[in-house]
Each structure stands twice: as structure tokens, then as C-alpha cells.
Image (cartoon, rainbow, N blue to C red):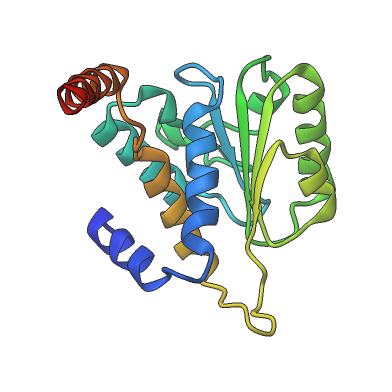
Length: 198
């Protein structure tokens, strides 16, 4: 899914609360304290989040935010996988303080993953989670987004992969006003107020 389709989906979901939730998680990810190479994206034993990682990588390049370039951590990378697709779970065992572990779990995250995430948090890593509501994972996460497996009364729930697109798109957006522009706006406003007072 390209960026224009993700933005169109966001327009369709306006008013449902999902735009705000995904923007909040995306902004938090953009501000997370990791350096380049320190954003570790990991999934479940049967679901590698390669698609989410690829979209984050695109957003990092388009937005010139190299700290958003993810390191995809896989449960069972094939022996002949290219280097960027050959990083296994041992990388989580080497996590350092001020790195970010982002768990993408459209299903049960499994006890071995939860143990590694708990260890990473103890070391000082920041933990993000996008999942279907696992309470243990939620308790470990500094920032999280629950995507229920099914809709409840009065709540629209997009498919999990759609939410991942919205989060990656939001992570690449810098909607903050640059300080230099704020200074210029203040200066103009001050001159305008001075001229009104004369």
C-alpha cells in the first residue's frame, strides 16, 4: 500500500478515533530516544512484521528521519537470507539502554517473546506494542495501541495490517512547526499588534 492510499484510508476512518490513536503512536515512535539502528521491530513466532518494517523504512527515507529505519528481528530467519532479513531473536538478548523494541503482534505474543521484552525493558529499552489486547504485553509497553480482533458495539475496527500502515505513515509525518517559523510568526504578530496600537 502506498502513502496516498494510506492517507485515503485515514480520511475514510476520520471520526472513528483510529486516526488520533495511530497518530499518537506514530508521533511517540518518532520521538523515541533510540539512535539509528536502535529501533527493533519484532513479531510473533508465526508473523514476522516485515511489511510494517518496510513501510517504516520508506517513511524514514521520505521524511529524512534515519532513526525511524527499523531493524527487523525474526524468529527463524533462513540461513540464506540477505543481511537485513537475517537478524534473529538473539538481537533482543543484546538490546541496549535507549534502544526501542516495537512488538507487532496480531496474535498471541507467546511467553518467550514476553520474557525477552521484559528483559529489554529492565535494561532500559523503550517498549512499544501494537497488538490485539494481550494484558501482559500492554503492562510491559511504554506506548501501545490495541487493535481488537473483532468489532464491539459501536466501535469500528479496521484490519490489523491497515492500522500498521496508519502508524507508519504517522511516524513519518512531522506536523510540528519549526522553531525558526515560530520565531518569525511571533515577530510578525508583535509588529502587527504594535501597528494596531498606534
